[in-house]
Length: 74
Image (cartoon, rainbow, N blue to C red; front, top):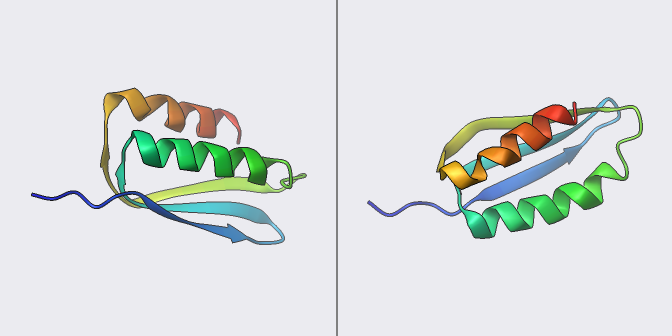
């Protein structure tokens, strides 16, 4: 079964900044997400960070630190 690479959408709203993740979180996707998160985090101000993993289909154990980093940023 072929996996679908990570895709994500960034929603920049007045009350929250939201990442919507979809597909497989692999190492390449993690690097892209990390870079975009670092850029986006500088614009958060007092807004909430929301990470929607509804459509995330999987990821390796090595990527589990992404979840903890994003959760600790809330």
